[in-house]
Image (cartoon, rainbow, N blue to C red; front, side):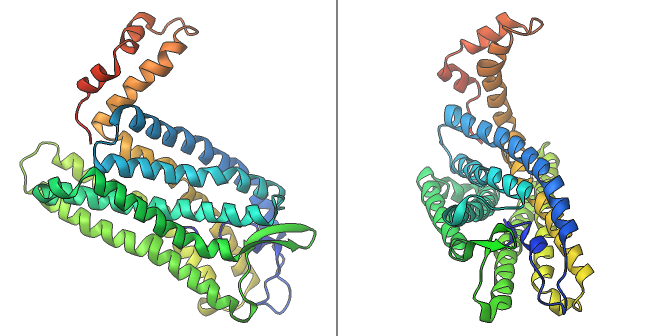
Length: 356
């Protein structure tokens, strides 16, 4: 995961004074830049993310029937992304108006859902990584361990941990007056505000980057060693996919987390400088958008790259989408699509039998 505490408020740094400086640090240009570019970028993430994750939920629900632990984790990963995406329209409006108009209670609820979605996304990616590791490296043991019951149990525990991880955001986030507008941002105790800010940044980096990345490196290293020792024509394709998963995860999350860390500890790294503070605010906005887009990539790298999942996707599109489109688009092969759509679900499942 992870987004920073107070990070969700891309305008907070732009609308308040920075008391580390002897004179107020004016950041109106950063605020105006965010109001101009963030709403369309967030809207793109919202549309693409909804399309991909809803398809994953529909296909898993319709065809897979949760017969494996992997499918359960994939379903929960999609729900995590959808939970995060549910909050995006509110942040889009916030970025556009530079004013929080939804009130104190909604600030707390949406902040909690936002971070719960982000934490659970990371945690389920970790569970999927461990699941793959067990399936490849300890195949015999995995037959007993990778059960549907255990998948459901670990999913419930994961949602509980995600709620606990998001709890501080619910406690500290408030709707506050700022000049003529309202902001939704954390309000830490004044006597140790800097300490809380640094603690939250470290917590995000540890739970959202360091631990997940370490687990991925350990698990995927073991998977690669196992694959390379087997005689399998597809092993190099699998190894390539593993590198893609790790690199994508690192590229999407590392810039944001590191910028968050710099922002929280800027007084330790730099001298008090208004221009440097503005640069960090801009970097926070850019890296946050990059991290947001990870929820659009998840369906692609964790579901749609699977050969059988792609077959289910093609069957779903032909049966439920293309058949209806052919009535309005004359060059689509209507009769063939109708024959495909008339296949019973059980027949379709037999043709595409094995799960992940």
